[in-house]
Image (cartoon, rainbow, N blue to C red; front, side, top):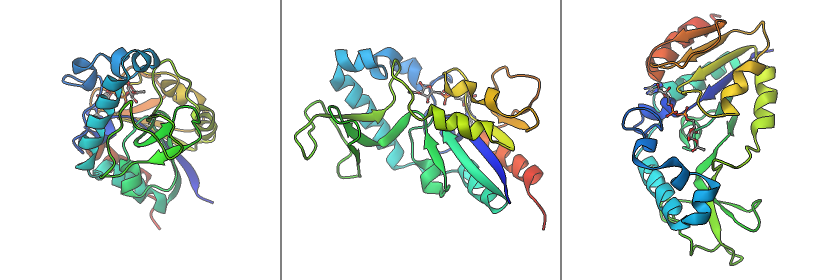
Length: 230
Ligand code: OAD
């Protein structure tokens, strides 16, 4: 049986694909007040601004391709059962071809009905934009399928389950500033190694092996180490 390799990815894994991160210098939250464009209160106050923010993010994503770090996670499936937990709302893990992906903070290329949140719609290049006036096939208003600040994170339970079953846990490209995602590494069994790839790593417990490199280079190093020769 293959070992379970669980990944927890953040914005940094997509940086080399041209997607702007949130908290780096020049990051999104430097130019947009986070509580205006990504919170439940902000959406209630000015939904047009929030729609516009996510329309821009979608346009940026259209030109983005997975980079070597996303591809390395697919390669690791040769030797491991790989589970990807991502805070990212982009679809680059999907485009790379990872088999199991759990989005903690929603998905940029989806919108959902406001009165019926279980009705989720996939957007495409021709229907990329949403506005406060957008309606679904039932005539109901829709919103970005994003977990705003001040909202619950529905997938966290499953993410905790995956983390607590990890034989190896890899954190990549996250400032570990946002909870509950940042707490996942605390659920990893004491006997399972934890790696953290980030050029500017946040403080982490001593047991974590830090690889202070950009995602592509750090993942290449890790693949060399985890590759099972046969
Ligand atoms: P942040 O912007 O907070 O952190 C990005 C991390 O990526 C930092 O630790 C950088 O050092 C690192 N980084 C930058 N370039 C990198 C590269 N080439 N390779 C690897 N790492 C690199 O992004 P997240 O931690 O993902 O949520 O942010 C978490 C959440 O906060 C997001 O999901 C988003 C945001 O508010 C919502 O909007 C709900």
